[in-house]
Amino acid sequence: MLHGISRWAATGATIALGALALNGCGSEAQSQALGSTSTATVPVTPSLPTDRGVVDEQGVRTFEVTASEFTQKISNFPLQTATVWGYNGSTPGPTLIANEGEAIRIILNNNLPPGENSDTTIHLHGLHQPNEFDGVAGISQPDPIPPGGSFTYGPFVPRHSGTFSYHSHTHTAVQDLRGLSGMIVILPQNELSSEHVDKDYVMTLQQFAPPSEGALVNPFPGGTGGFPFSTINGKTGDASGETINIDEGDRVRIRFYNASNVSHTMHLHGHDEVLVSKNGHPVPITTETSQQVGPGDFFEIDWTADNPGNWIFHCHIPHHTSNMQQSGYNGSPVGMTRIFHYNGFQDVRDEYFSYDGG
Image 1 (cartoon, one colour):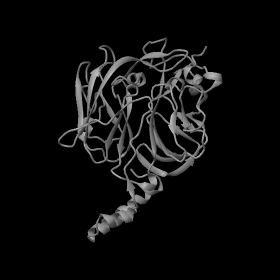
Image 2: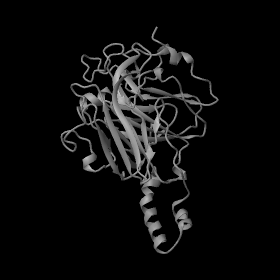
Image 3: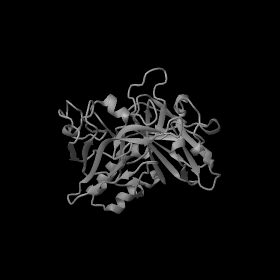
């Protein structure tokens, strides 16, 4: 996937490459026309696993995900755990990573507890899959998967590289807000060296409303509190347990997806964010300090690590940086917060990650 200005220039470059090919020029001339290319950095998802799937003899990359109910630690205080729904034992589910131009297949197993709202499907958000694999219960998939059942989506070839998501599209108002979501990244075959990043991070934004310690999260919380826990990759900042470590001079990318019910304004301290992609498509380069992200939106921002320190990336809506309206250690932001730490700079105090509200 090409980023920023280079991606807008890609159309002209493609025409030039076509002319070179028609004139019998080889790959060396084509490379000179485009500029040098490099292999894309494989993204990391803090607090979550990455799944590269299994490639079969036909070259199809297959992912297998299982929807189930389990208990997950989401915060250090004032509650710690919640019963959630997720994929492969986590919410959000593992980040699925494939390559541009290859066919993918996703096998969904339904291990949700039998009962109301337990049939399920998967929708592959932004991938332009054939209609029979769109996963909308009662419409493109008339019969959703009952507990104990399975369904195979694909194989099909995603139309382009980029950042996308997967989530339930059955009883969506319940299942998505109990945790049935995750992210998909389709890596480009080649990217311009000028657009290459050294570190690439994936983040899913969620909110949860457990009524008590360890209880099943409520998708329809009442009162004025709304969803009292705002998380990145299924954990509040204090429960993340560690900083995200980078080096001075790194070019860094953050891919983030809003799987919650409300909008968030994501802000990086100490650096300019450069917006390069929205919903899997390039946008004109925009330098900014915050990015508004609505439900179902996913963005890519790039930035240069040129200001050593400990810097937070967080939602700028004040309630979303608290846990049940409580701040963290010494009044620090928690909730929808992660910390980028420059290697060699002083560490963040351990108390930030161990504070229990007492």
